[in-house]
Length: 137
Image (cartoon, rainbow, N blue to C red; front, side, top):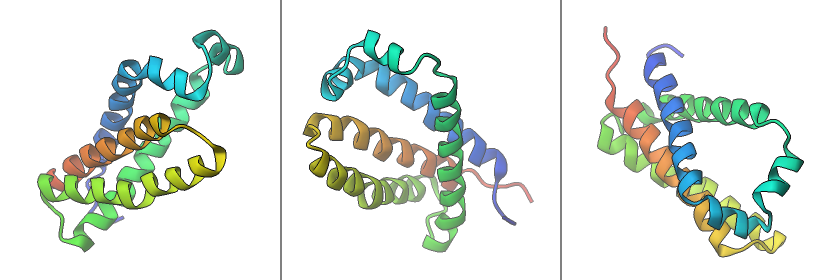
């Protein structure tokens, strides 16, 4: 973990989380239609949002740490390079995995676009922050 800018990682994770709040607010109605539930059904299934929110932050920070470890090895130590690497990793690893799973689960392409799109944009954002934020010596 030497050489990792921990502040950049945590800010990137929080930024990803905040992007998710805006993303799923903007795409909330389409997302609920795609999962086949109403807001009331979601509230009944998940009486407290605390656990999913904590998980979302933790996952974002873990991904940001993975990017902080990987970006120097890829030579992507600029905001633009980090954003490109983050987006490509999300497309290659997350979007494809979601597509495979959604195919077997008979989920809609709209749901895939919403969820995969969030991860591609989110990982590009995290990559830009982690890749572009220089650690002070």
